[in-house]
Image (tube, rainbow, N blue to C red):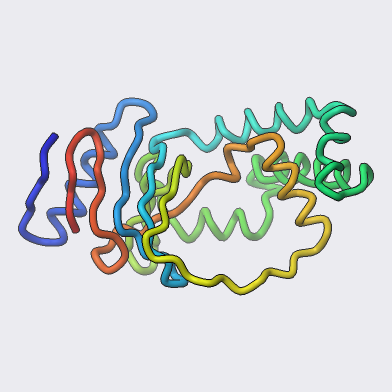
Length: 196
């Protein structure tokens, strides 16, 4: 394990990018001191270089295989069977719709137009040029907590969240981390720690 002490920001960002490009398959990556847009600071372990298309396919299989027993178990969270079935149906339809460029939602199209994919875990914002690590959240340790405002979600959204949790959907665990010294302290990747 090495602590890479690179002289300037560009060298450090390039080192992170190079490590991601050279990654062979999925790999655990540590992100320390990440400050989100609300001011919460936390340390994360993520799984980088995981193919999102594969995650969608696996999640679709889980949703399409939902049984009456699964629906009954989800209703124990306080939702009617009809609402749970509707949530599952809408999620399946959304995944299938977004796989086809001709039927993709405006949000999905906007995401593809806003970012340029560099690797399975790095994308660049086309306007700002900022790099983002895009990966599956594995664990999170909050070091500076904040109070989040309550969210008033619709019942269907809450039921969809319950479905995501019940089926442990991988796509619901994807997170973005801006690679910027103002938002994170360091990245540990393939045994090396790169401090921003």
